[in-house]
Image (cartoon, rainbow, N blue to C red; front, top):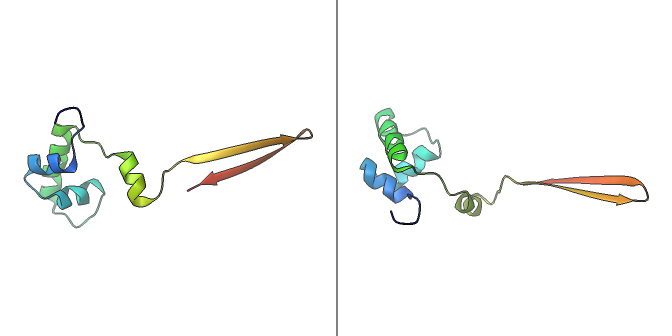
Length: 84
């Protein structure tokens, strides 16, 4: 696996299933047989796979970030909250 972390493909190879099956398990889709789910989760644990949050943000167009902007003028504060 070199310098990079394990990928879905690495987990799929380890579990002996398709990349799509690993994706369904990791994303919590329910239409995966319990035995296959256990096999994939064991492969995730063995490989140390963790989802790439930057890639997930690109796909979902959501970062999970919250921004709070404060403005002070004339002794009073204005606050705006931004969230995706």
